Length: 216
Image (cartoon, rainbow, N blue to C red):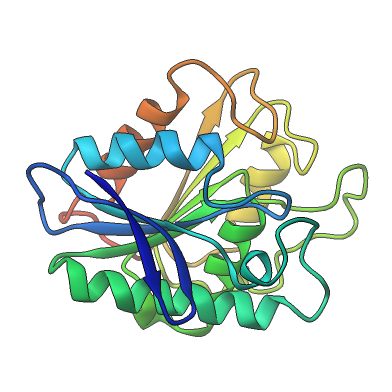
């Protein structure tokens, strides 16, 4: 069941599974989109089918403006919105809590987790924007060495925001357990048949309760 979700600082949609496991994940959108992005909807539906409660929500900058990218001063408020989404899901579901998002949304979730490891038990980062297109010198990895939260990175082989080799090198900076899920032929939108199902399967396997969250 999908229902509108409105709280202070939050606007989005809650996916309630028929057979909840107690696990939950909050998903944020990219810089040019909103919580109605096709990728977020598809991934949310796949998660709900496995028993996850899912909140896909609009970041603060999108609640303030219906279009356009985030402005330089928006990131801190967007991260607080992600924190609020995590708190809201904890009131709804009683199990493990995960955070994630596409591109900008995933990056802000990752930065929040690096600053506050207690905010979530794991991350799902879809098309992490490693650097601006054609600007590989401008890496967005300054917080990676502080990330102690296990993370699943999903990346298309044709993503202009970072090659797969660049992603592998960047993930070596992270002390927490990580994995890279490669979507062959996909661009930044991860628009490939079967991608949402594969993403959820990889995430659930990696975030198994048996998994050690620290690299050996």
